[in-house]
Structure formats: C-alpha cells, structure tokens
Amino acid sequence: MRQDAVRGHLDGLLLAVLEAEPLHGYAIITAVQRRSGGTLALRSGTIYPALNRLERIGLLRGDWRSDGDGVRRRRCYELTEAGRRTLAGERTAWREFTTAIGSVLNPVSPLNPATPPELAT
Image (cartoon, rainbow, N blue to C red; front, side):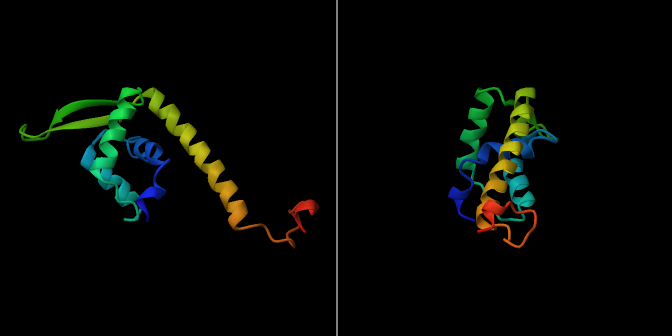
C-alpha cells in the first residue's frame, strides 16, 4: 500500500494500537504491521514525530522504561483519557468516511427495493 494512503489516518492508527497497553516505538510499528496483515509498514521517521506530537497535545503519555535486564531504556506510550475520547471520534469518523466512499464506489442496485425512487435512475 502506498505510504501516502496512511496520511490523515496515522493518528487513529497509533491511538488504536495503544488502546490495549503501553508500547514503545518499534512495538507500535510491529503492531500496525501485524494488524494490517503486513499491508501497512510504517517507518520510524514517520511515527516518532507523530508520537511526540500526540504526547505534546495530551493524547498520549510517555515515559522511559527499562527492559528486563535494566540496560536498554525505551520510551513507552499509553493513551490518556483525552486519547481514548479522540480514538472514539476517529472510529466514528472512519465509519462515516468508509460508508460515504463505499456508497460512491459500490452504488446500490436500482433493483434494490430499499433504494429511494429518486436514486434509482
């Protein structure tokens, strides 16, 4: 999938993969790729500025955590309450968007009785 196809939806993708648990950057990239069946491959140069921006505007909270051996520190991100509300809004907007686009790309058959007469021309 083209990288520019994600533009405009990146915030929603990041918020969605952080909904269940806090994750560090590479784990976020991996989660998006896994959830999309390998179709979406985000780059670190794309997500880290977005994560920083989402943290700055209060949708994410980030903190430094050490892994099990205490040597490697990673910045982990988790949703704030504002982030959860924003994610709910992103999901609603996405459903409305896909319904509208689907209505244009896959019009209802004129023979469908549920189609209003003015649309069955």
